[in-house]
Image (cartoon, rainbow, N blue to C red; front, top):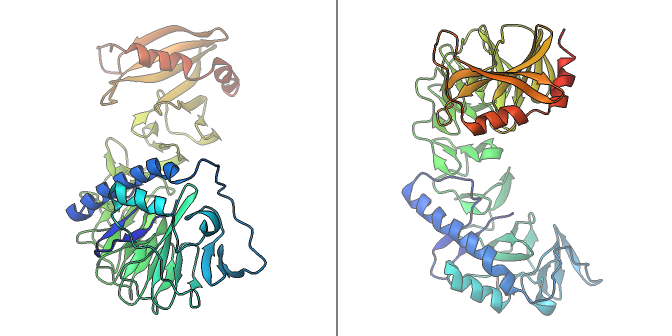
Length: 420
């Protein structure tokens, strides 16, 4: 979905941005809350803007007399149409960008957008297409906002058409301003702006660094860089998603395999939070699963996120699939509901499985659940205290159900064939 900046007749602007982007400054946060509500309202009223007949979102075939301007735009009978998909008006003007339907404008006005400026009065003779989203004529720059099977083209407030240009990775600029996805980035210097990570809208200029529209206090733009995954660093600090990691050593900070796991000379981290109890010197990434977990190892064994695989010790890991590794005569599995570790092993010629018992809220491990794997299912299930403890935990019924049913017995038996 594209996003745009609407310019109201009284001069105020409403910027529609992706909902996953955050804003820490109070003014911007307030604006975004309002805007996200507007997007929701937009999604509710758009169907009412259309007539009952089904409207295709597919591209409209050009007429023989059309002049192709690129990116779905054509000059037709002295007007500009977008025929790349969707509508904005009705009848013969369904795709004419400067004639949105009165019904659409009325609905917009009724749903807190106010009276919006359309692209009425655009100069078709000098109209130039820069991309599907951005166009201009000799007087103004325009931005195209898409939603479902409707589009709306509006002037981009404060943009200077003569110096306006596409920059890179969603950024555009003129001699005075910088925009991202149609949203004005206040205070960013257009002459020195650079993209650090386009996936997360991380940019910098000569004086500041910005993460998803917000300035990172005290970040050093001269040395600020993306070092992998959601981690960044400058000469003074390491960051996770634009937030400084307390007491992290920037000089030795390193990301393990572009995963969520990192370390410096003193500590291990996951998603910017300290992983307690891990040996930093021997810490290695074994497997990164983008579903949200990492299998790592250190001198004490193998772990998934902050939990340790039962019975695991140092050894060479063989990756079986994106949730399973083999280490010696152990098969280490990660269950998919809560990313909890399980260990498959043989004991007295019986195939066995173990998983940590843990407190539901804190996920602090407080015991071990063990069972025999048989063709009929898991048998002889027992709960044991942790080594060095005499307290056998009480395991919630749902945790037992997950343990019993999460890994199909057939799969466990097949994996057991890999164990000597």
